Length: 388
Picture 1 (cartoon, rainbow, N blue to C red):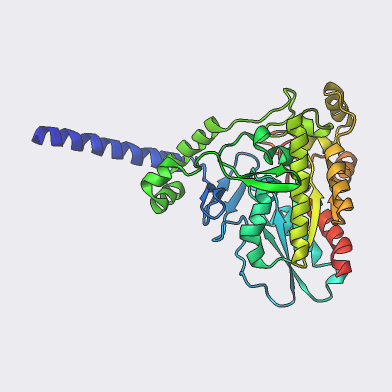
Picture 2 (picture 1 turned 120 degrees about the horizontal axis):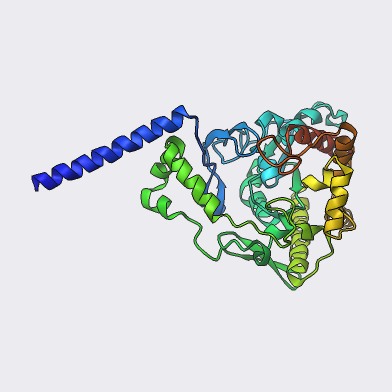
C-alpha cells in the first residue's frame, strides 16, 4: 500500500509539475484565450461574464473588459443622473466590438459626438452598451426587458446587422438548441424556450466560483475552452457561396423558401413589438441598419463580381426592407451603408477587416466604428433629440 501510495503521489506530483510548467510556458509565450462568455441565469443562455478581461486577438487586437453587470462597457449606475439622456444600445458582435478598444467602439464615438448636439440644451448624454456577440433581434428584445430597462434609457438604439440577425431569430435557420426563439401564432409572438440545457457540465461540476477562477487564471483551461468552442461551432451557410463565415447571402434576395419567409416575418414582428413596448414607456426606439463587408467594399469590381456570381440585383435589399418597416411604424431610423460605401470608395480604404483576419471583411475596424458613430450621432440628434 505504501508503494502504491508513493507511486500515486509521484504521478500526481509529476502531473502538477507538468501543468505548472505548461502554464509558465504559455505565459512566457504570451498565449492566451480569455473567455468572455458564460451561462447567464438571468438571460437563460450565454452572455458576457461579469469581470472577465483580457486581450482579444482573433480579429484585430484590443484589451477587453466586461463590467460588473456583464456589459462590454464601463461601469454605470442604475440610477440615471439628473439632466441626463440615456441611450441603450442593443446589438450583436458589432456592438460588443471586441475587435477595437472601448473608446473606439461606435457607441463611444456616438456618445462623444452627441455632446455637440445643440438640441441637448445643457443636458448630458450617457450611452450604455448591451451588445452581445451572436445575439439576434429576439435575444436583444429579451435583453431590453431583462437588463436594459432597469437603467431607465430614454432612447433605445437597435443596431441591426442584416448579415445574420434575421437568421438568428428562428431555430429553423439558426439551429442552436440552447437559445430562446420567437415564433408567430397568428399575429402573436410566442417565446420558445431552449431545446436543451445551456449550462456547462464542467461549470455544474466545479461550481461557478471555481469555474470562473480557472477561466480567468489558467491559460491551459482558456485554450481548452477556446478549441472546444471552435470544434463545436457550426457555421450556418444557407448558400454555398457565402462570402464571410457567419453571414448569409440569402438576405440580399426576396425570401426563397418558407424558412426565410418565416424568419423575416418573425423579425419584423419583433421590431414592431419592441417599438410598442418602448413607446408605452414614453421612450423612443431608433433602428439602424449596419453594414456587411461586401456592401461597402471600396473596390467596385469586387462588388460586381460578387453580385454577378450570386445573381443578385440589390445589395441593399435587407436594409431597405428594415428601413421601410421603420418608416411604416414611424420609428426613427438610419441606413449606414450609403455613407460608409461613399467614404470607402473615395478613400480606397476598407471600413471592415483587420490585418490578422479577413481583408475588407468581418467586423468594422476602427475607421468603420468612427464613421458609424458619427453618422448615428448626427441622425439621433436630428431625428430624436431635436424633437424632444
